[in-house]
Image (cartoon, rainbow, N blue to C red; front, side, top):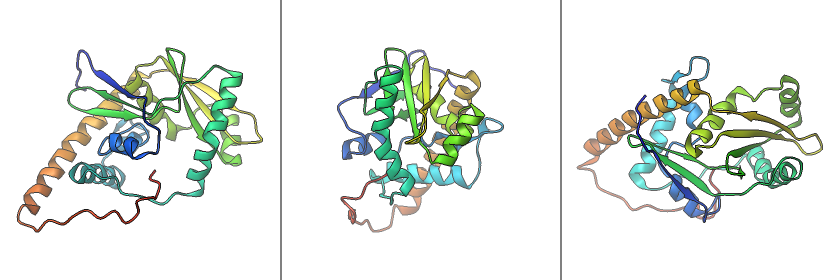
Length: 232
């Protein structure tokens, strides 16, 4: 795990999530929402599998082209987008006021890590909202723990923001709001840093190989076939 004395934080509070400016800020960057794909949850070691290789290729291609490819939205994604403001309002009413911000990037020197907070709470907290189907919300409440598949995102959010805690918020309309406070876990933070550092090595090698293989190939111009399609 590499260290840097003063990692810098850049906050994009003037852009709205889902806009062209937001995607431009995220292009080619490992973010909290995907970093879990680079980590083996059970061992907290960097993942070396088809999923991690696929993410590396996706982000390397974005760095090469400067474009984020559009992808269709699922019903779960659509529900999550619609539910988020309701969940934020319920949290603000019953817990604490929330401030919105578009995007954050922490520059550690050898690598950069991005994060789109669902909300800032005071000077020390965050929230991470998940819109859940009834079954998943019920299972989360009964287990009384943050689902394992969401822990990498929460810990990466804490690492990027530098804040003291994050409230994981599970929301399903018609059922009680459920929250669980999460604090920085040193084991997770090391795992995230190790995984992102390995990603950077692999992405750099992939881009270098690409440039070598394409140096004599004819270029083409980018065509945006889906200018109005939302990207997730």
